[in-house]
Length: 322
Image 1 (spheres, one colour):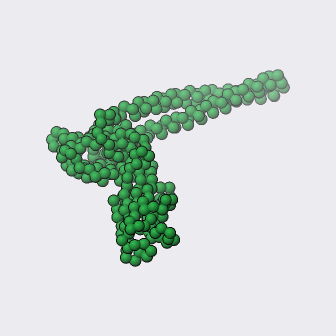
Image 2 (cartoon, rainbow, N blue to C red):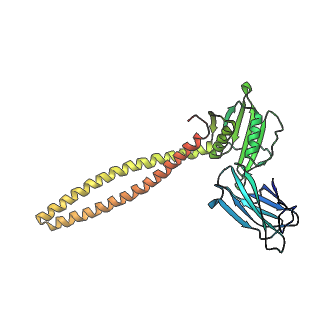
Image 3 (cartoon, rainbow, N blue to C red):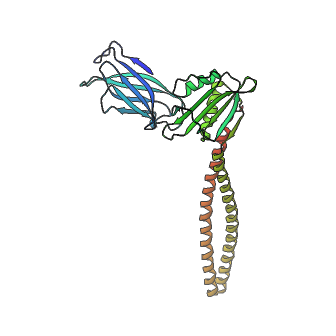
């Protein structure tokens, strides 16, 4: 936990006042909390936090309704980010009107929303496996840096970890075991392909790996992706059919316009009315086809965006030179 002490010119609060700041996971509520504590019979009036990509407007202020020596501020990152929080704690004494502001820095690990849980047999079916030649101690350092825990492996040549995501409860397994030729095989088990890609990219950046091949197996994601590809084929086939139908409809409208003009020049009013009625029906049918084609086009674009996102997520499961 981070700690800051007041200077000797603290004013209304005792000079021995200290502030302790740390991150704690509340599994019951499914949130990550920034816990601030003060000493020397003082109280916390409020906490202001400044951090990039963490809050809307990059700042958050929370008053303390209980005016107690301890305050808990929920931290809810929208995605996995590694950032440093500038924490300003407003400390005063009971009944006082003035307060002292303590400034403390607290680092938010990239995967702070994943808490360690005991190992079990119910690991996710999806996985990403690759090999590294670096020492396993470097992987341990990476785990200590990116996850909110102090970790020491029980086996010096093996890492077995299981995490649970706060709120969702999705499991995340990390296994590092010895392999042939003095290398280590790393297995990331999670049903979230995007999370697996973030872990691969962050680990390779920490190890300064420029290239890395991996073997990915995400059956749930692939099944969903197959459905998306099938929709793309169906929407594209319908698009081609509607385009052909609209071309035929346009030719029919042109022919009816010529027919109506000929009937007008000949003074054949019954034939003119008949041609205009047919023209109206053809025009309405053409407009309806256009509405269907526009809706189909939007659905096709949505599916193509899903395909692009899948390609991007799959690409992050490996590392290659640019």
